[in-house]
Length: 463
Image (cartoon, helix red, strand yellow):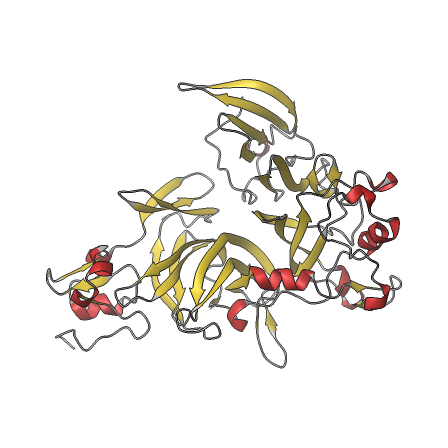
C-alpha cells in the first residue's frame, strides 16, 4: 500500500543510508487525471509501482495497478519530476535499477537511450506546462565542455505536447526535444557562474519597469568542491523562447569543439518546432534534431544578474517559492521570494528595483526564519492562500509545517521600525498606530506609511 504520508517532493531524500529507510515507498508522481481519478507512483522498495485511485466522498479506491518503470525511479535518491498536461503524463526520471538510463518520457515517446548528447547524468529539478510545450529544468554534465574537463551546467529542455513521434524508425522518439543552458552568473570579463540548478518557481506574471513579463525564478548553487555559493536568478519566458529559436550548437567529431551550426545546414521545416503531424516530417529534419538538440546561446538571466547571492559555508539554498506582485501602499508591486536552505531556514527576499526597472537589482533580505531547529534541509516550499489566511508550507524529509507569510505586528511596534522592515506585506497604519498587513492599505493608501526601496519615510515621527 502506498504511504501517503511520505513527502511528495521531486528532490532526492538525503540521508537515506540505511536499507530499511531506502526500502520504504517514496511517492514520486502524484497527478490528477480527471475530477475523480488520481495517479500515484512510488519507489515501492526498488520496484516502482503506479496506481490509479478513484476518489469518493469518503475514500480512495484502487481501480488500476501497473509497473512504474519509466515513470518513477527505483531509488528514492534519484531526482525525478512529472507533470500532467493536455491529458498525458510527462516524466523525467531514470528507467533502470542502476539509474544509467535517464529519459524524458510520454507514452510512447522518449529521449534517445544511452545518448550522452541528449541527457548526460542529469538531475531533474522540475517541469512546467505552458502553451504548446512542456519545459523540464535539470542539471547535467556538459557534453560541450568535455574537451576541457568536466563541468555541470543547468538546462531547460522542452518538448511539444503535439509531438507524435517521427516517421518509421523514429516513431518512438521525440521530434521536438531541444535543450539550452541557463546562465545564472555575476557578469564581468570573467563571469562567476552558479552552475547547478536546485529548484524553480511556477510561472509568475507581473509588471517589471512598467512592462509585463512572465518569469520563472530558480535557485542555483556552485559545485560542492568549489567556493560555496548560492544565488537566485529569474528567467523570462520570452528569452527562453528566443533561445530555442536561435542557432543550434554542434560538432563534427568527438575531438572537435562545439560551434554554432550555420543556418544553411539547418533543414526545413526547422527542427524542434510544433507541427500538425510530426510523423510526416522528412527524415532529414528528424535526423538533424537527433544530433543537434543543444542550442548555441544560453538563456540570459532577467535583470542581467542574480537577485540574491549568498557565499559562505553556513548553508546553501535548496528551494524557492514566490508570492507574486504584492502591492504596497504607494502602488508598487514586488515578487516576494521564500528561499529554503539546507540548515532549516527560510529566507524572505525580493528585488527592490523590480517595480521601477527591468534592469536594476536592489537585493533586499527581509527576514531569516529558522523553521526546523534540527537544521535539516528544506526540500519543498509552497505559498498557500485562502479567503481567510495566507501561509507558507515548509517541507523537510520528516515534517511538514506551516508558517505565516508575514509577522508585521510582532516584528515592529513603531512607524520607523515598521517601514524599516522593507516588507511589501507590512505598512504603518497612522490611524490605528500599528504595523499591519491589512488590505485596507490599498483602498486608503494615504493613511498608511510604507517604503520598501528606501526603508524609511519622513512621515514617521520618531525619525
